[in-house]
Length: 205
Image 1: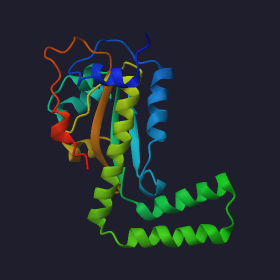
Image 2: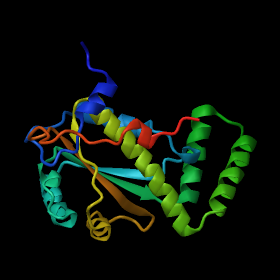
Image 3: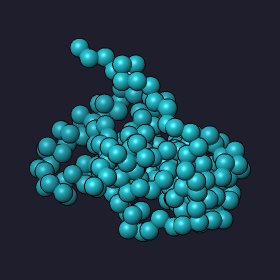
């Protein structure tokens, strides 16, 4: 019987170390496609993801990430970064919208005014927080895609963001948010998965 996506969610766990087995380019592209198709507020996709396969770079990142072995043993390390350049992103989105759907100029300008009004309401800090939340939605789609493909992963916040941003030479409007090493688990989980009960997590009204 073919395993379903929901079965694969039961299978996944946060792998702490990976086998020296590469994730194929075909599967990697499927994961990236899931990220690309993730929903985002206003459709702006305010994030950028670095896909790091270079072992030397991963070795430089490992001490920045508390020497956690996921970093250097993974096949690829995905660095999810949030973009706070909301106005520039709006212009890019509208240019793409016009090219894709051939909207009339007046409709594009109406949409630009609406999106800019939304941006105007946010302080620089609020723009960063908004972008970070959208980035985590994209992360969720990456995790789901990995589970569907039976590829292991481990979302990680335990790293020095300032040092990583400097290492990757990020622009001021791009900040690292979360890491996702992917690959194939070196060992099966030692303990059973712990999740709170349905009654604890959900209220039905």
